[in-house]
Image 1: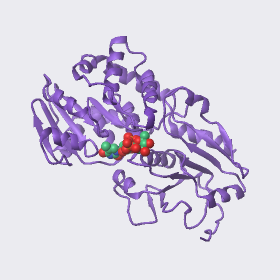
Image 2: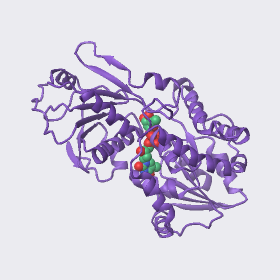
Image 3: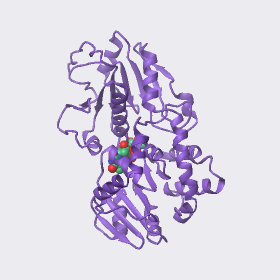
Image 4: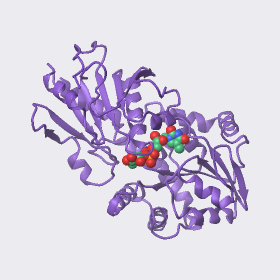
Length: 394
Ligand code: TRH
């Protein structure tokens, strides 16, 4: 294949940034990249292109995306369908800042052009989020390229000081506060999401976003038998089969409603990312998974339960405990242990005990608010990344 022509550098209207994203599975890879792209464009004025190899996954959380276009622009961001590993856009333009998400391999022709560029680009490898202590030691470590005069810097998201932090839009807290303060906004949200008004104050509202999970059957039974009303909001997805089985339904696709005992459940359509935040704000407790929803639940400042992305040889379990150490560490012993028991049970070790969780709800509610403040002190990932890149471009 012949190389595409190399263009002169893009107009200097702002820092040009290319983000390369290979979707491994699910929605977290593109979910993080898209959120980062929007922040760099909206809050830092960067000219951003996103190269993504799976438009279908992207379309699920960005429904305005056209599936059949090789190149398109949404919200001022150029999206290139990265259709084969060697593809680097129709015209080879190398950006000032190049972000390789989650160790995906950049097109060789692009790397070669990076090396030829008059002003060497800042090349960042954005890693997966982990709350483990070693992350702070590896954050911003450079790695020289074996053949070219280029260096790649590892950028590690994290939950503690010395890491890259996690993504948080500037207007996020204000948007949440506005939602929480407005009965009309909440009522409109409930009508649109479930077709019903908001439940009474005594109901416990729970969102459920998870992978297939054998512990779901027991938890659904406990919610059915709970003393107070439970309202379950479940975006359509990998856990929907378990909910359908519990209610004796053939499926639990978006728009389905069901009730047994004290449990009422609504299946919601998968929304865009902003819509997912509103779901978290509407709930008392959020079950989340993977990486990006795990972060959003922390900004929602409500108690949450994390279904971590399972890895071979249980490599995910130390990551689960590292997150617990940050999040639950300052809790008194009894609620701290209860939260750890519940998270472990939801991740395969034992049976989740809802009564045990609820007993400590007041402590969990207060901790969720404190933790959102503590996490904000680490700084927003997009801001941290932009600051580092600018310091390198000087
Ligand atoms: O989908 P996830 O499980 O994604 C990932 C991937 O599996 C990835 O390969 C893995 O490495 C990573 O987890 C750890 O979970 P996550 O990260 O929470 O991504 C879901 C995205 O979908 C997130 O951006 C929120 C968004 N979302 C919506 O926009 N609307 C919705 O209705 C829902 C339920 C989610």
